[in-house]
Structure formats: C-alpha cells, structure tokens
Image 1 (cartoon, rainbow, N blue to C red):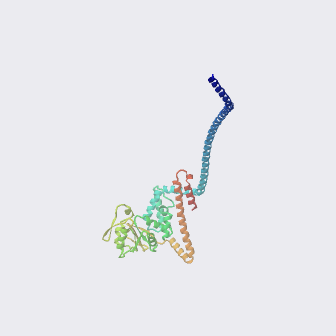
Image 2: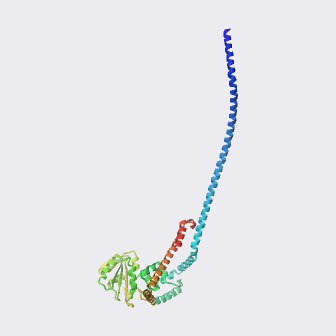
Image 3: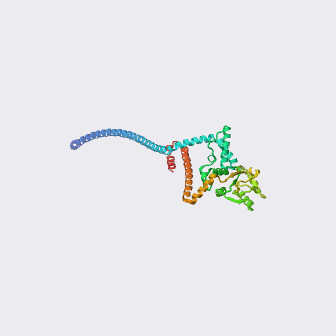
Length: 395
C-alpha cells in the first residue's frame, strides 16, 4: 500500500507543479497565438505591398522607356531643327555669295556655246594666222582675217565675228607674264608673241628696234639662253652645246645669206621635236642628238630683208616693226616718264594690278566652279565647301 500511496503523492505533486507552470505558460501561449496571427496579417499586407510595388516598378520602367523614347525623339527633332537652321544659313550665304555670279555664268555659258559652235572655224583661222600672217603689219593682218573669215563662212563653217588670236590661243595670265618680261602691251605685239610660241617652224624676227630680242632674252632666261651674232667665229661651238643641252639659241643680225651651220637645224620643226623618235642633226662635222628642249630663234635688224625662198619655207617670219600706234604709245610713255615720272610709274602699276586682278578673278572663278562640281551630295551639307566659297568671294 505504501508504494501506491507514494505514486499517488508524486502524481498530486506533479499536477500541482503543472498547475503552477500552466498558469504562467497559458497567457504566454495566447499571446504567442495572437502574435502569430498579427505576423500573418502583417506578412499578408507586406506581400500585398510588394505586389503593388512590383506593379509600380513595372509602370515606372514603362514610363522610363517612354521617357527615353520621347527624349531621343526630341533630341532627333532638335538635331533636325539645328540642321535646318544651319542649312538655311548656308543657303543664305550661298545665295548672297553667288547671286551676282548668275549673269556672269549665263554670259560665260553663252560664250562657251558660241566658242564650241565656232571652234573649227576659229582653229582654222588661228592656224592661218600663225602660218602666214606673222610677216605682215597690223592693217594687212586685219584684212587677211576679214578675207579668210569670209571664205570660211562661204564654206558653211561658223567662225567668231570678233575673232582675235589672243582670245583663241592665249589668256590673261600668259599675257601678264609676257608684259612683265618687257613685251609691249598692244595687240600687234601680243599676236607676235603667240605666233612665236605656237608656230611649228623656228621664228625669224624682223626686229630693227631690238624690242623682240630684249623680250625674248628675258622670256627664255629661266630655261637658259645663248645669244650669238650671225657670222661669229664661236657660233658653231655654241650651237653644238645648245643642241646637246637643250638651251634656247638666239642668232642675232641674221643676214640674207643664212649661216650654213643652221641649215640642218632649220629642217627640224616643233612637230618633229614633239615626236618620240630621236632626232639627230649635222652641225659642222658632228652628228648630234637634238635635246627635246632645244629652241632656235633667229632675228634680224634689217627693216625690210629679202630672204631666199629656200629660207622662207623653213622659218616663220614675225614682223616686230614699230607700228604707228606702238610708236605713239612709246613716245607718250617716254615723254610722261621724263616730265611726270610718278604718273608713268602709277600707270605701269595700275596696268599690272589690273592684269593681276583679272588673273585672280579667273583663278577664283575656276576655284568656285571646282568646289561646286566636286561637292558630293547636297552642297548645303558641305561646310568646308561653303566656307571656301565665302573665302573665295571675299578675296
């Protein structure tokens, strides 16, 4: 019985202890359940807010994409607007700079069309002038041009009404160079210079006043020139050197009986030298190869020489006799240079400036046309071309 009683006592004690413990733990369990319920409620709300946040973030990303698209479109439109303003400004510059060239270019187009139509007749007339007109004075040359032009027109070929050798075969830059070297500034002298430059035969200048020889010496100075008088004992040796080395060889005071040493050279003309084959001539007892740069010029101080036909057919006669107009200009220039030297210097300076200005205008016109023709795409997109055009027009 004591064992049963002991077990019962232990149970009672345990129940008492359980009572006291449960009395403390029960409220805590209730608070735990309440806390768990609150946690679950908070967790549910958090999940709801997270869902709302995801929706907001998604909407924000959408708005950001729309903002980026709108920004890019705005920047593109702004760039297009800037480009349009730039092109408008360039177009204004282009119109302002080139508006005064309209009539000029229309005129040049008409002139070029006329030149193209008259090309064959002008070339034929130029060739006739070079081949046959050099020996005649200005009045005779004008009459020859009239007669030849009439014959060309009768042959149903077009030719310029106001034909001049200068317009056909020269330009302002070349004439400026010649005049700066001492060539007289008159049509007759310029025609003679063109005939000298373009003739296929060696020139023989009728030059009693020495105007042509003075100009030619300076003109050929850069390439090298040897000058000797006809009949000189050193002519043969100097001629050999000039032929070999490609110098310009000028023989002054040629008599009506031409030096025999020159005969073989007179057989060679510009067309022969322009060919690719090697040319050899006999000078004295030597056979010499002719340098491609060799140039022969003959001159005489006789005002009215009489050369034999076998000489005339080998050379181009160029008459540098003083014309009435040229004499008047020279006398006037001499009087002015003596009486009013400053005025003469000013005149020469103005003539040079005028020619240089014309050359510069032609050069700038060519530059403008080259810029316009070489521009790729729209000229308004080429900032460099617009700037170069402005600079060219400003100059």
